[in-house]
Amino acid sequence: MLDLSAEELLTTTRAVRKRLDLERPVEREVIERCVVLAQQAPTGSNRQPWQFIFVDEPDKKKALADLYARHFDLYASMPPPEYGEGDARTARHEFVRESAFYLRDHFHEVPVLLIPVIEGRLDEHNSPVWMQASVWGSLLPAVWSFMLAARLHGLGTAWTTLHLPSDKEAAELLGLPHERYMQAGLMPVAYTKGIDFKPASRIPASDLIHWNSW
Image (cartoon, rainbow, N blue to C red; front, side, top):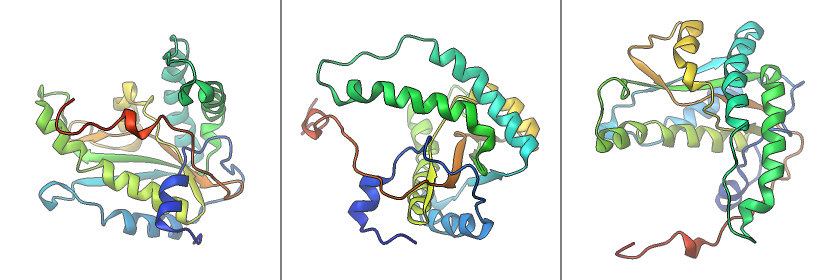
């Protein structure tokens, strides 16, 4: 495990794409240790309703990568968001775009893919916002904890969602009961090329904080 302080871990867990090591296998026992750490994340009413599907079979990885690429290409053709002059997001836009295209082209080569799932479907019941927040709030902390644990073990990850318009096809590929479980994303899991990640440029925290009213 890497010798990182809590602050270093939180400020250097990046979305990793171009620095994923596509050649080095990822041991299952390392992934299992990360899952054990992720299990400590809180869930609503302590239900623990989430499960992780890991995929390392080449044919299935290729099929999932193809679903992702289908919708990525459409998304990438849309006009990008616009930010003000001097905004940190503007400065990084082309780099992020380039790395996203790299992942699109190499997704099937990543050693392991992760699809987090949670029991229940919100899209079929016109669920109110409070219910949506409760359900996703019982899954997303566990996924983020897994990503942090992966970083500690020298692994890189990136949260992607563009295969989800075809989530039923993905469910059929994986034998997942689509009517019972929702998928939250498709994540590459691989060792990183180097471990020297740094804090990223962000917009000022003061632009995000509100006290007592908007």
